[in-house]
Amino acid sequence: MTQVWNFSAGPAMLPREVLQQAATEMLDWHGSGMSVMEMSHRGPQFMQILQEALDDFRDLMQVPQTHKILFMQGGAIGQNAIVPLNLMNGFESAAFVKNGSWSSKTIKEFARYGRADVVAEAREIKDASGLRPVNTYVPTIAPGSIAAGSAYLHYCGNETIDGVEFRQAPDMAALGAAQVPLVCDASSNILSRPMDVAAHAIIYGGAQKNIGPAGLTFVIIREDMLDRARSDCPSAFSYRQVYDNHSMYNTPPTYSIYIAGLVFKWLKAQGGVAAMAEVNRRKAQLLYDTIDGSGLYVNRVRPSDRSLMNVPFMLREDALNAEFLSLAQERNLLQLKGHKSVGGMRASIYNAMPMEGVEALVDFMLTFEKERA
Image 1 (tube, one colour):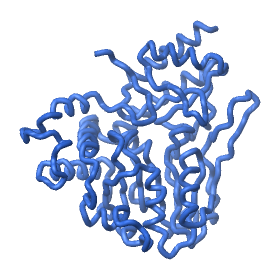
Image 2 (cartoon, helix red, strand yellow):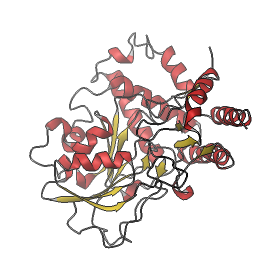
Image 3 (cartoon, helix red, strand yellow):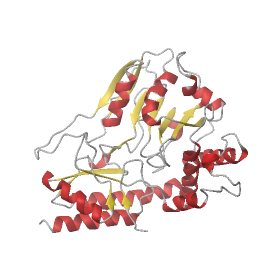
Image 4 (cartoon, one colour):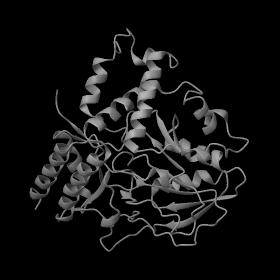
């Protein structure tokens, strides 16, 4: 089988060991005579799969007992509506950090449910090179800018399209808003490095980038947030209902949960989140060093805010884009085209991408540039 390196932003590549185990168990899970896709979600076999996945996720994330873990559906886009439906009872507004494409979508959706107060915004910049404008930094939240009556402060921990990442969560006490709950969309950097779960009221995201296949949504929620839903919140979207029914108020995405559970076990075998953080740091540094040392490639994100998961870069000559992508595909380097709203290239290097894949990309980039010098 040909080895390819899949740099897709999501659905993203999965660890080969996980795919091999899933293939082995496809027709008969642990002697049950059934595929996981055929099991009753309330049967003992799937209940075991679900509980192990919840336990391993809690262990990897070091989730305190003050917080509960829910498995839902609808992805982060669904949560853009589900979060306000669950947290806006008795509130008129929430605060937001606007630092890229996904946080902008979150703010737009929230407008259906209340007033969105943007307390920090990354302005699009177009420099002298004439490159396309792009959000290039994490904006600073001014102390005192978050209204005491805000339902919560929302931020996107890692902007997948723009390649901008919070290295630390906003310090609510330092911002003078210690009583305002903190909510994070962690879709694309979950499990990539340690995260202070206790500092957050809710951490949510789609699984299809760093956990497993599309279809599964994770929610880590502080227990006191379970009972703040608006009266018009649909039952299937109610965090309280989902928690009380052990993430099975409706039929869950069983196979996606099964694969996620295998990924969690794979991560534990790699040494856990702290070990993965060091690997991710080295992968990203190699790629950014290559870009920064080049005369052909450019990344315009402020170095302190560069994503460790999604690395966008431009070729200084747009005319070379098609050739770059074509030759990359010939080298089995796939899904490198940047998002249509930004252009250029993007390499997503999630946990499942080994150093070998990044080295293959860097080798190609250097060769491509040398041949055009």
